[in-house]
Image (cartoon, rainbow, N blue to C red; front, side, top):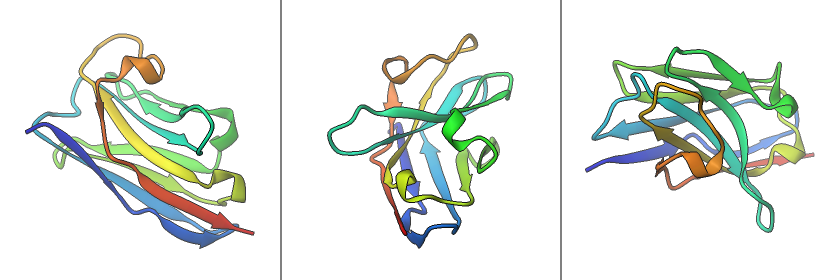
Length: 123
């Protein structure tokens, strides 16, 4: 069964760090687009960071310099290391993937999603 399972969310104070993980089963992260998104109730889901099929990374401006996306193909696991967290980073974080060798597009492009992990940052 193909699925993504996120973990690592929690509650931290502003300035703190968390590392999110996304374990894949049933498929591989090789030669695929893999990404982290986040969503706050009442707002659209937004992209946070992406790794494309050539392992090039992309970041939303609001996380550049603070978050790092990485993956371990052998473990089929995607990570998001988050530092210098801010209250505005509070959201449900989702991982997503699609087996594709071209441009990694936005929310509607991805066909596999995890269930999400909550990150809460207090001031």
